[in-house]
Amino acid sequence: MSMAGNLRKVTGRVGGLRRVARLARRRPRVDLSHPARSPLGSSVVNCVTYREGVRTPGGEDLVESVRRVRKSRDGFVWLGLHEPTNEEFAGIAELFDLHPLAVEDAVEAHQRPKVERYGETLFAVFKTVCYVEHEELTATSEVVNTGEIMVFVGEDFVVTVRHGRHGSLGPLREELESDPGQLGKGPSAVLHAIADHVVDEYLNVIDAVQADIEQVETDVFAETGARADPGRIYQLKRELLELKRAVVPLGRPLLDLADRPMRAVEPEIQAYFRDVSDHLLRATEQIAAFDELLNSILQAHLAQVTVAQNEDMRKITAWAAVIAVPTMVCGVYGMNFDHMPELHWRFGYGLVIGVIAVACLVLYRGFRRNGWL
Image (cartoon, rainbow, N blue to C red; front, side):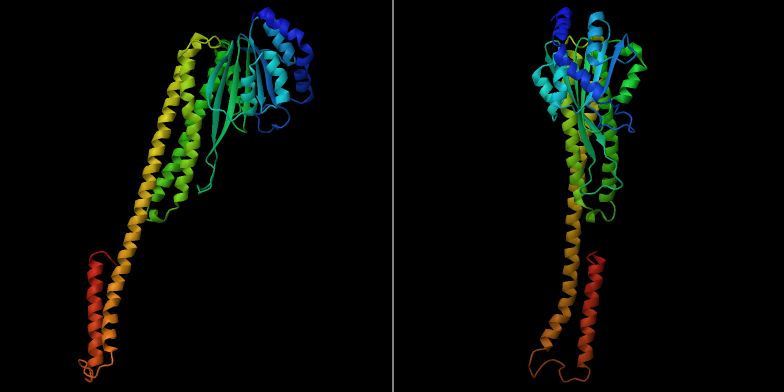
């Protein structure tokens, strides 16, 4: 569709699209990058127009910003949303001519990382992760928390939809604005910055999870490792699996962005996606290594438990052998026979007790020497 056709489409539907503008005016915009500001005020986080990589003064509503950009054919609009409803997103989808399937994915969330093309619009899904701080790792500790960022990229717009209470793009926006040269390359530069930001967070979370794994490994191979709680190991494996589900599926989409020609992605930007893909490969390899390490730690823990049980059984067997001597002797002399050895001898009792004591001492020293006691 031509640029003039898009403009006529916007103008012809202005009655329905004004709902978006009224919504933005009625519910104040909230920048989630600032913790002091409540994220509950509106799904519209920010709406900014950029020309030649420079942020233009605000004050216009969304429809007016899009109209001006399309009329001048210069710059683009970056609209940021946080967990919008179907009603809130309907006018935006109509304004930017977004595909219904992509809109459904963006609103409902819980999608796998992917990149899809709908005409001239590119739709990308990224899983965001954050490390959950905890004083001590337990069998129920939450280690990794996940969210999602959906990105619609067109010729003159970027629409980001974020799900979850982490992964704010406010700091990323400020960083991009400090580099007008990069931001001036268009919406695909924003897409690359988001992908790079998400993958960098993967690496940060992986470093934090590594510290937890090292702590568990230290505890298992300590002197009391056999008594360590295996639930912590299983919990780490579950959290690592959640991290793996966020990281690994992104590999193929990033390769597509780096190698396959796409209208929404400038050829110059594709080289940057190759660098992001390399970082993701590193993250994927580390996750695989952590999974193998946790399997080894779990096997080592189970082996330690087995060894400890064997040691306990040896101790029990050794003491049973020591106790068997007096039990046998006393059992023999407990029989009601008249003619028993040394039965009527004055020193017979002392002799029997002495024999029992010597036999038990010999057995104890023998077991002690062999490490059974």
